[in-house]
Length: 195
Image (cartoon, rainbow, N blue to C red; front, side):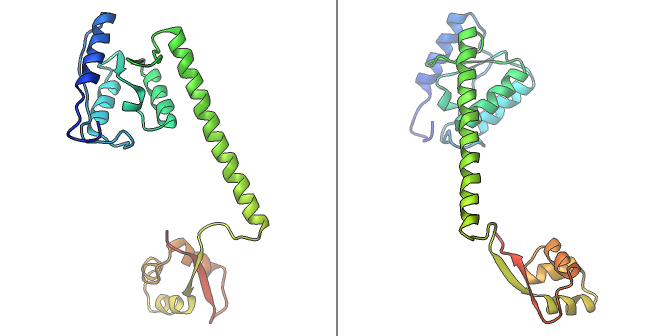
């Protein structure tokens, strides 16, 4: 639950009931009270994954998948981890149950949609970059100018390239490359602007 005034009682009751009906033994419960499910760093989730990695559990039971996963991508990745560790996943209120053939099919369908979603995002990104390039737009971070003569002067004083780069607010590699490319004296070099 995302706020302290909400309760997990309903979720715990239904999860316990499912465990009992299936004849399983409840080993431990994990809660994140006051943390949004959209956060990937949650104390309860971290403790759960520690138990999974130590192979303390055989089945992970949740009230609803959205109580655990922050996105479809997160769901697919985590379910792959659980499968690799031999842990089944069961939802109390949804048809997700990797301990049954139909439940595994449902998760494969979700995984396929997750992959499709990622592929579409990549396709749109590539198309958008190509269109921007055709319009003459320069891709990448905008360039920021720096004084290469000042850098050469500081280097002549015996200051290290790393220190000079830091003074100028550019990366070590950027300064090193500008020096190596031998920009003519008196010119100003360009470096990508800091993000």
